[in-house]
Length: 68
Image 1 (tube, one colour):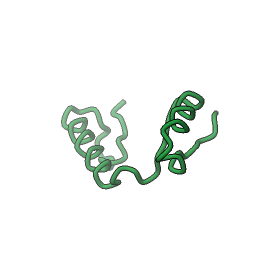
Image 2 (image 1 turned 90 degrees about the horizontal axis):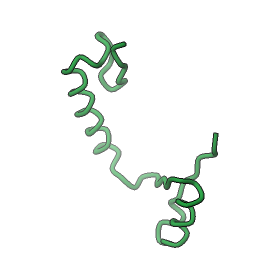
Image 3 (image 1 turned 120 degrees about the vertical axis):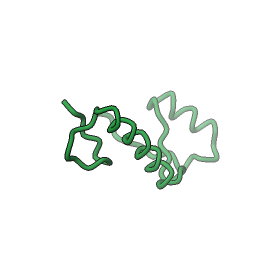
């Protein structure tokens, strides 16, 4: 497994970011997106999954445990 790299230090350096993307295949920016907004999207998607019967009964919604 490849080590996990955070790219916040190069946020203003497009060339460095492009090189990292080519080398690592991803860019990760800690704190770039509002955490609560991401959690709300997760909640919305998991609610739809629950309504479709795709999540295990009796489990916590945000755990997202599949109904297997």
